[in-house]
Image 1: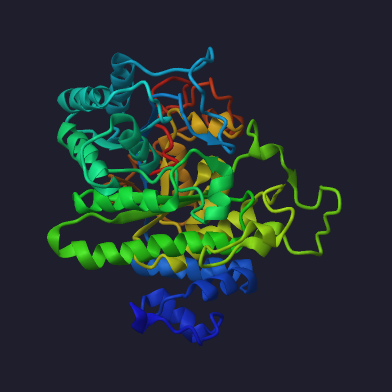
Image 2 (image 1 turned 120 degrees about the vertical axis):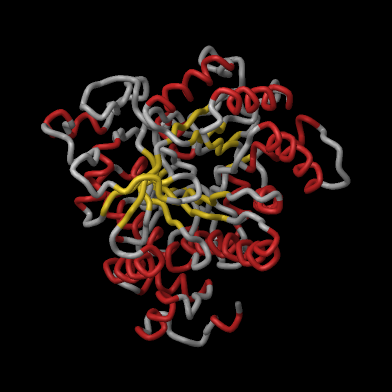
Length: 470
């Protein structure tokens, strides 16, 4: 959409930003980078909030009731940011059997859940028939549950493991994906996005697919009529320009998808969710933070920023400490990045707030920094919690956070259509008599401790879980 690009304009110009809010103007990558660095944080959040309001109105913000099922932790990748994966020989390596998986969905269905997010490691011991039978059994027993499953890295490994027919990679992906759709798959989550810039991705995600493969899998999904999401994990070795490059690649592919597939009923990216890297129990987390290493000078640019380019062409030789120092992202960096994603990704409808990594109240604040969706309440979560971060919220608490931010909470489905608007006295939060049952210390628990989610403040298994990777 080149007519909306004005690369010669100062991105801080109020008239230009008003055009971005209304959709009449579009940020270039260079302008996005300038906004991140030059616009005061509160101002960046304000413009993102205005853009969100232009798309979603100023009254309703949403959440979904789903469950995140990690069906196996056995994985061939060697991602140094992951504390979840196992090689397969460890005592705690696992693959869930069908009945365990179905019981998890049964519990979700019993409390009014509408979808599952099902992802796992890349397990070479599982055949395609294992996935097909699982999907068929889910469809037979739970036809009302939306199956949001199998991120692009999983599909890349499906091609490697199953050796499907096809003249090229895209055709092979299509063959596998079509069989899974026929068995009951409805949509794809955006897991494994991490950071697309080659210098960063190859260093932190060894054995995981590259950006082009990730994007190709999503293109096949869109061609087959499925909606998907896109994600980004930041706050590690990358530079700010790498974050912009990542958003730019998603935006460009979305442009292509809308232009080429909209009239034929194709799918698209319906949501973008970003979150900061969680360092505990990971190899990447053992790197020293910038400023704590020998010879580090905080007056000098961060190594990742020296290397990063908005076109993804960064060269690791530009700084000798690239990949050896971390710059973790706190609340301010998180909110700035989320706000920028709302302004930059003008062709993606939903921006999700990641309270699972940042905590409930920063997630709540995200609703004023461009996010229209709070994700899901949490029933179980294994990947982020393996890296030391587990926040638990049930439906009443999540609704209260949305309402206290100044909005009407509403339950949604996978397509972001509203299921139930909580505008009456029977709303989950308004029906609570004693908020003392929802003590703050229950919002942060160990991984093996069930979160409270039955709606009455009691501890128990009947909770819905956060989708970090919608």
